Amino acid sequence: MGNMHLETIKEKIRYSLNESVTRWGVAIKGAIALLILLSAVLFALQTYPLPEPVQVAIGISDRCILALFTIEYLLRLWSANHRLQFVFSLYGLIDLLAILPFIFGFIDTRFLRLMRWLRILRLARFFEEKTWFGKLSGYEGLIFARILFTLFAIIFIYAGAIYQAEHAANSENFVTFLDAVYFAVVTMTTVGFGDITPVSEAGRGLTIMMILTGIALIPTQVGKLIQQFTKVRSAVRIACENCGLMGHEADAKFCRQCGTALPKPQRAIPASPSGPDSSAIAADTP
Image (cartoon, rainbow, N blue to C red; front, side, top):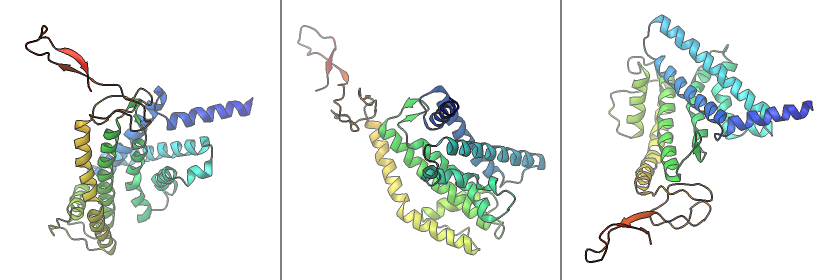
């Protein structure tokens, strides 16, 4: 009985952490997403000259968030069906990297401080599902959100990395996180104003990586963003009666996911002025 009860607890925890169809699942996922965004904001605020009490409060808040992330990771690991597989999975590795500064907090190295900026990648888990916080999401809208997240995550991580690498040696140019974001955007878009120049070896190496990433990735992502934005605007909000997927092309007859015939949208067709009835009648779309 004891083992069965323990397995039931594990299953409930695993379901609550990985699913967003229940009230508990929605609350947990919402809290995790909020903590990830709050963590990113705290890191950006730490680059500004704030009063000492504010800096202490930010440091304490950051430690508390890291502790919560560590507890979440341990719960995921404990409740996983295959623990080794979870540890070496993509999201398992991202979760582990996010809590390394907490686990090895007594070692103040640049590498571990750099890991903090990768915490934003934990949001990627939310863009792999068909439902967001218990609500069905359209396929085109989901792709649209993934592209936006990709662009945001690339800029955020590169900005954090270049700030970490250049702030100590080049504090005149990289004063705050906003300076690093400005440099990352200008470099990745290959505009290159030249008003900010990295001086460290690590900073120059990151600059080369930014340029290559900008050439290889940014144009394709922006192109996809424009394409998906057009599709989202023209998509018909019809839910498939079999799998529930929404967001199909206006002339779509079958669901793109399961192949089930889609219900036909209703539209108003005005009657002929010479006909006996001049009122609009509802007709099926051919």
